[in-house]
Image 1: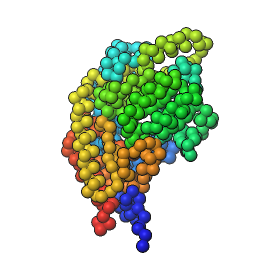
Image 2 (image 1 turned 135 degrees about the vertical axis):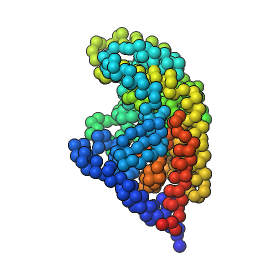
Image 3 (image 1 turned 60 degrees about the vertical axis):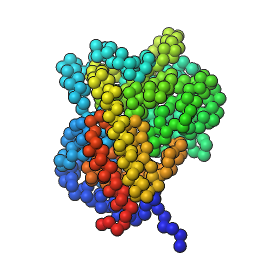
Image 4 (image 1 turned 90 degrees about the vertical axis):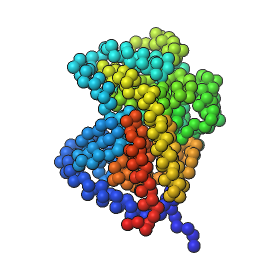
Length: 460
């Protein structure tokens, strides 16, 4: 008799049994949430103000009453240990007191006026001190920061294409919405309303494959390599030894620029993965939590890149640069940015985050081993994932194959019913400076309970 088929080492029938039970449990516990959604969802497309709010594994989304520190409370009164933290936007905890004070103070001085403030000047010095000697510009999102950095690279190199990695994520930047299919760069599946051929401006190769990078750069039309130092918006993929240094060398050899996007990997420590590991990008992008949750992102360039851009800028025809938005650079951003860099995202905070994340990954690993599942847990700094496949993973193709949405959604929902919220995307968990050991241990216990339940069909 052939063995019964499994999904990520689990019986599909058992997965469905647990899913149905957990969905019923969630629904029964949230009558106020259901009533509020029925009363107020109609004006919103598909019932939510932003479509990502439908990506949670629960039968319907939570409606939040408040979030403080590393806890979130829904309108039914359930207090959840929050390890999602706004999918990195609140990585340092919800409403850090220093940021809340900065918001209150700035609110009385004006919200936007398209001119620098004293906080802006202070924030620039703090950014350089923290992340390195870059010349900075600010915008509202990491998507825009990546877009502007890539425009600079194209301008000064005179080249059109960007090299990205299969499975990458750089926000909703159209230029990077490509993937590999049978060894060819193609537009990603599922794009809405795409109006032009993305492959004309991008080439895609696998992460950790320097030979493929060199082959693409040898064509002579690549303006920049755009990469995260760790792939994070797929199942997490770490760089192999020498890979990131190899990118630097290959970019120099072939006249391309290297853009490092640290929007997620600033969890690595003070100054992000770039500072912790001594990387040397030409352009550097940071966003999400850098201003404590206030929508803010920055992109910086080295003095050498800035000199090339100044020469280009002086020679170009007058007219709109195609860069910038009216509300970018508002004084509220800078008040929050300065407060976060100076008082919140400190060396001591990162040390607490790092220790907590190690405690979490160790606990998850023990639970996986005890359940006998072919999974693994992994982290980069304060960012932790469990992956429903053996590891480590090497590239985007392996990451896609390791993704098991049905299994993952049941685990997420089971954790939620046990008082723990994790990100709806790719099993990501963040440990903030205010996350306690007790919260970490509760998450490990909840994870242990749900994976044991999925594994053991003798449980009711």
